[in-house]
Length: 367
Ligand code: PMP
Image 1 (cartoon, protein in one colour):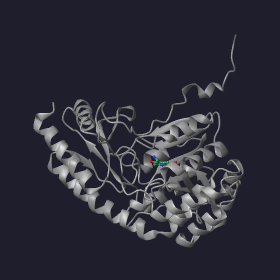
Image 2: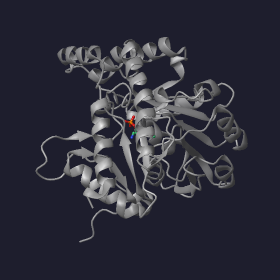
Image 3: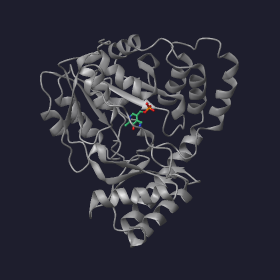
Image 4: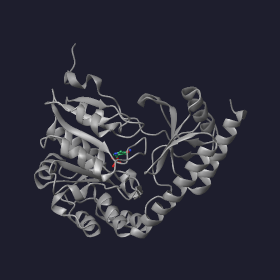
């Protein structure tokens, strides 16, 4: 008997694969450096707020997340009326596709862009279109060249995952200026807090001038709240109002909102995490480069390590070697990066261990 038939465009919908959390069988100590999580966890104040919220979970959460938006507005100076909160920034990315793209439409992103973009496009029947990059950096000219009359959304992760590279503000302006104003440009700034280049912007400063920009942010990275699924988007009043009507009314559980507020209020915690990352990102990059590995310059909390000689085989073998020692990195053959490993910056001693293991591996003990 024939069963229910889903939309034909869902035939090619991929499952999003997160970073693995298990090392090789039998390995006791596991250090997970595969999902760009902060090694410090959340602020203790966020944990306290989360625990305290247990007393009210029989009540529906605040559907407008008003206190959370007010806390973000206090920190950033942004207009809380033009924020939409999502269950992770993933939800906001998907809402943009649901609102602005559908069957027959095209959604552009750069080669080696974040894996959710094609999934978000396909989930609404739109066609994902990959624009060539330029040496692991998004290429504005190539993105603009890919625009057709059917283009509805362009996603730019800035900094990008998994490459760690970024586009400076002037390039983002060149991109948005070259797009038809009917195309939504999503500036996915999941790693914005880690970017320290002087010419970087997450993009909220561009929203007034370009009402087709939506900036997305997350609490999953530097704020250490990945499991609570908290993200938000910022854009023009019209776009945000559309996304807000489309989302589930009670999408953010009270514990998520409360922990988010406390996390925003503890900027000292964020500053510490950021300075650790900046220092360690530079140190690990230099150490691995000295080992003869090619590291893509990163503005995020991870680095992409390239094995230039016999790339795919070496990267896979290095990954297995690290897994055997309990260190989980991310090997990304499905994204065309089979010759690379992505390493999330961990605690100093964890980074030291990865450097030492890769040194041993390259010295030939391991292969
Ligand atoms: N954008 C990018 C570029 C990411 O790397 C991630 C997390 N892997 C996200 C968005 C989604 O993050 P979340 O849904 O946890 O906010």
